[in-house]
Amino acid sequence: MATARAMLERRRSSRVRIHIPVKVLRREPGGETRDAPAEVLSVSRTGALLRLPFLPDLGSRIEILNGVSHEVREFRVVCVRDRREHGPFDLGVEILYPARNFWGVQFPDELRPA
Image 1 (cartoon, one colour):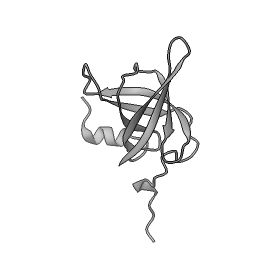
Image 2 (image 1 turned 60 degrees about the horizontal axis):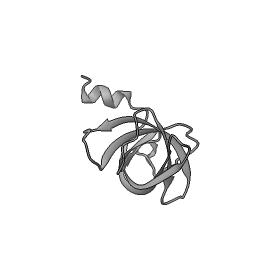
Image 3 (image 1 turned 180 degrees about the horizontal axis):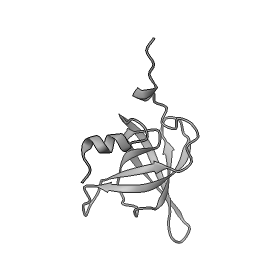
C-alpha cells in the first residue's frame, strides 16, 4: 500500500476542498441520456471527487455540467470510495480533455508571492 507521502508526490496537481453543485449526465446502453444532480467535494486541475446518487462503472465516461459556469466536460470514473450497496456514492473522476480551469478556482500551487 502506498504511503500518504508517495500518493501526494504522484499527484499531478494540488487539491482544493470545495462544494460545487453539478449535474452528471450519462448515456444509457440504449442511447438514452440520463442526468442527476450531484456535488463536487474537492477538485484538482485534472479531476474531482464527486458525491452522486448512482454508481457508474469504473472506467465509464460521464459528462459533468458545472452548476456555476454552466460548462460541460467529459470525465472518466477512476475510483469508488467506500463502496456500499446504496448511495450516495463518492467517486474519483479524471477530466478527459482539459482545456482551462473548468472548476473556476485558483489552486495553491498557482499562488505566487507578491
